Structure formats: structure tokens, C-alpha cells
Image (cartoon, rainbow, N blue to C red):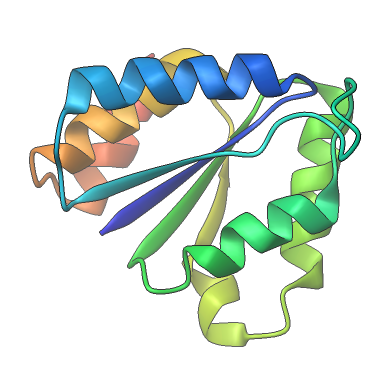
Amino acid sequence: MYSIILVSHSKKITDGIKEMIEEMVGESDNVKISSCGGADDGRLGTNSVAILDCIEASASSDKIYIFADIGSAILSAETAIDLIDDIVIQKKVQLIDSPLVEGAFAAAIQASVGSTEEEILKEIESV
């Protein structure tokens, strides 16, 4: 199973991307999408602890891909990765350098059809 964590300053953005991907992927035991956008109070912002919570909730996945949009969303994702105490979980996590929407969509589609990690990463590189 692959987990995809969506990080943006806007919860509306990550919720919308999650909805779009889940609609396209349908029911799949191969991929789990998590929306981790916005600040705790509902305003624009990012939260490293909330991202860490999404990572830890995905601990049973084989790989955990994080897609972030801009600036401090990337920094918050990096901070969340640094906060992981469990080395096993930390080795599963990868912050992907790819456009948020296109990259996450490509990864989810490939994961949903049972592609290998190499195939998924190659598809992400092509977007």
C-alpha cells in the first residue's frame, strides 16, 4: 500500500485534490490519500505536527509520498519528516519534488493499478 499526503496552505486545495483523485482511482486497497492542508484554526497556513500526524497514521503503508505545493508547505513537510521518531517509518517517507496536483494524481493512479515503486517514481518524473 502507498500513502499519499497532500500538503498546501489551503485545506480547500488539499481536500479538492483528494476528492478528485479518489473519484478517479475508485476503491483501491493499494493507495490511501490524506489531506493535510491549512492551519489548525482553518486559516491559510501549514502545520508540521498535523503533517506528522498524517505520516504516523500512514505507518502501515509500504511507502509514504508527500506532495507539497510551495515554500513553507515544503519546509513544514521537511520539518515533519525530521520529527519522526521511528526510523522504520522515516525510511518509508519521501517528499516528492513534483507539481502537487499532477504528481499526486500520477502517483495515485499508478499505485492503484499495482505499479512498482520504480514505475510510480518514473511516472511522477514525467509530469
